[in-house]
Image (cartoon, rainbow, N blue to C red):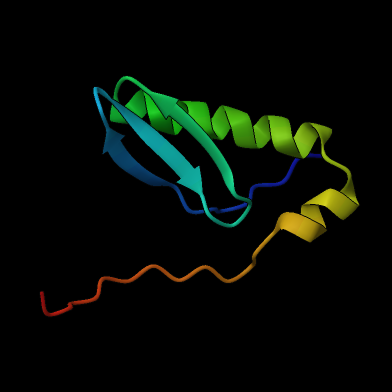
Length: 74
């Protein structure tokens, strides 16, 4: 039985497209649009969970990822 897991997706513009990253597992993908980069990341994560051993998942999974904005003087 499949279960749902909530993960983080960071998407940023790179050249003419977008790169998407899941920092919890260090899995990345890309696409021509934000939605395509997001969808491709979901597909890459689903494939990772289908093929990775339980040990590989435990080794790579960072349960606590915090994303915040900071200010610096430049």
